[in-house]
Length: 99
Image (cartoon, rainbow, N blue to C red):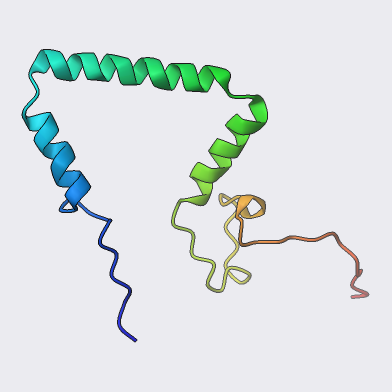
């Protein structure tokens, strides 16, 4: 089966080229003004977030890292927060091993 073509990822997409052209045609002052407005917007959005939303954002960021779960049960890595991965379901302990 051929790989799925993703036309919206990369530096040569239509949106990326448009953004590049806009930046190229801006002066230093215009770029600085846009950056100040973006910083103010991000600060305002972060100020309105509740602590659970902040934790969720951090978990989402952690989840997006490249974690290979292939044979993960045999190669446990204590630096990875497996409980935060959306594809992992760790249930409660229901059976106690007799050995």
